[in-house]
Length: 121
Image 1 (cartoon, one colour):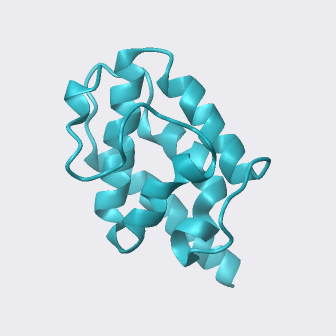
Image 2 (tube, helix red, strand yellow; image 1 turned 90 degrees about the vertical axis):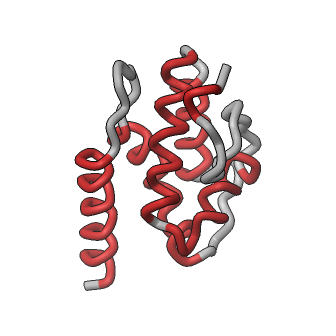
């Protein structure tokens, strides 16, 4: 029952982001970004366990780095999607922001509501 609710929550979150976030002329879409961090759902939702290298969460963050670093547009789109996610999932915005550091990945921007994604070089 709990697993079903958790899956339903993440599905609803992804659908809302697809509907609500408009990323113009972007190569990376929010569905891709959220699927890459789906392995981090326990940490984002409950704060435990902290992700470490080799876990599904950190593997997803490493994949996100590869996608985001492919082009400036991809980096900006990834930023927009993550900021939309933390805006919608505010209770654990700090957990989402900590993911790159915990996984040893630098996305080239800070996951913070004040980040201006459209100015990322």
